[in-house]
Length: 116
Image (cartoon, rainbow, N blue to C red; front, side):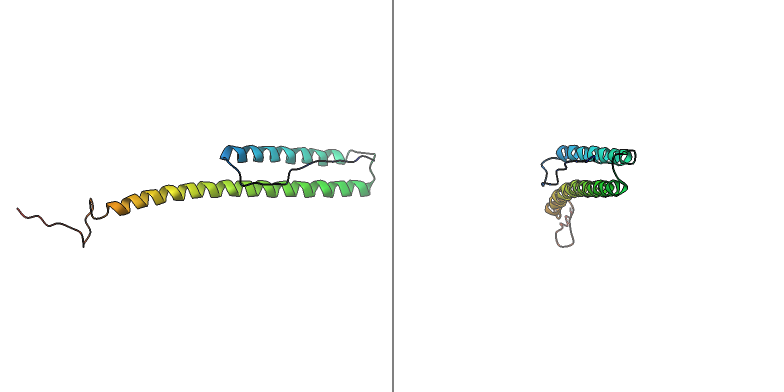
């Protein structure tokens, strides 16, 4: 009987930098490729019964699904960080323009009429 074992790290932290998330995603993608290769070689294994092959196939597919879910979470976290960063830039720019209202761009309530 041949037993296929793989180990996956299922913990996902908040992440420090974008490059850490990117490297984590790359690592998870490598695990998915490895598991897919195991699925391909599973059919060729003559030492397992059909029932054992089916069981191993299901286990590998479940692992692939879990890893793909982790990848989706990491990608979503990256997207959220990018959006937060963009919103922060926009908030800073809009706060600056609010201060300038009435100074460089007169409003109806804050204007000067100069007659010479």
